[in-house]
Image (tube, rainbow, N blue to C red; front, top):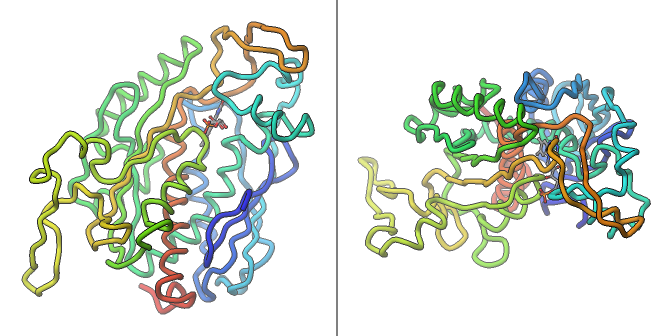
Length: 367
Ligand SMILES: Cc1cc2nc3c(=O)[nH]c(=O)nc-3n(C[C@H](O)[C@H](O)[C@H](O)COP(=O)(O)O)c2cc1C
């Protein structure tokens, strides 16, 4: 489906880093979901670069909703959101046009699009395009919140520093969703920012791990084989530029345990509802949600564009070369990607819920 994802609720992304605009078309969403423009702006603010730990490119993200919303609610027809690009400096890219940035998509874009690609600022492969994803994701997050489904992510690790683990799910999520640098332990966050700033001062970059928690998802959502909940989420999360690993629950860690340690024992709560005493499987069994919180981790690599000299190839001349990069880049992506991860999870869950309960379920009377 190229630049589209989802079956009942689907999203199409378009635009380039230095083009006039980028945007998203969200289709199949129930009618009657509040389109909260302040909330969309808030989510875009969380993605926006800030301070010395982010790129110097500053975009206002003055989004426009040009269809699919009427009198503050979704109509159920395609919702199209446009976001203009204002702060572009395309000259930075002309001199190094054919010098493939190691770790970036310049070479693979050229292979696929035969030189017709808009290479400026990474073009369609740029992290900038995630602004449209976040704007559309905000509407999905609103739809889920009205159904009691909450999503939040924190920077679990960055540059060798670990955040504390989730303790009070709903309280932690509420706090994280207000933070520009999403950590549960502010002291750990300060150490992470120092490591990022140090890497930036050395012309280098760092990676990190995002951990996402989803509360309130009903049990029984997902399919047993190819559209497992893990498969759907991983498909979408791997679309986020720089995400190179996705795991559920204890993920790779499960492989080192015995069954007696890895299994999540079932029990009954005082009202007779089934729950699991632990959550090492991340809330999914057999591709289907089991009613425990979803727990997802994404590995976000260090920003590929760094200012140290790097060996590369000029793919137009067929010559080896040394790349000394200019332009404006993030010394870390992980803190900006977390709201993108929330948005992607919200989109996938809206799709899976609409498939299970029907389109109108998300538009029903909310809280
Ligand atoms: C929010 C966000 C911001 C990003 N900023 C940059 C950046 O400033 N410089 C850069 O080289 N890559 C940046 N990236 C990552 C690249 O777009 C990505 O690494 C590249 O497209 C190659 O894709 P891959 O890493 O998934 O293989 C960013 C990604 C995200 C999600």
